[in-house]
Image (cartoon, rainbow, N blue to C red):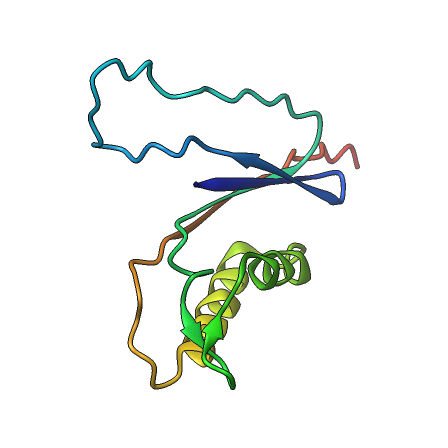
Length: 120
């Protein structure tokens, strides 16, 4: 199923989405679950498809894995988003190498920073 991450106060929280894909239809489908979160400080939200973590590559032609993806996000969380984007793209391209891309890949990150007033 799909997942998304929220980084706030120095830690990640993972939310699991429904196993039902957008556009799937089934009689009696009750609808999707809604998740709510309250924020008290700066935060990042990471939305991503499973294409990145499921991509084969590396020295042993294995899947990238969710663990590696989380480590990539964690290791670069304090950088500006444009720099995070470059590092995520570079990591994917290095991992995939000459391997064919397995699936579509989407990574979206939104950062909210509370602006501090300058009283000087």
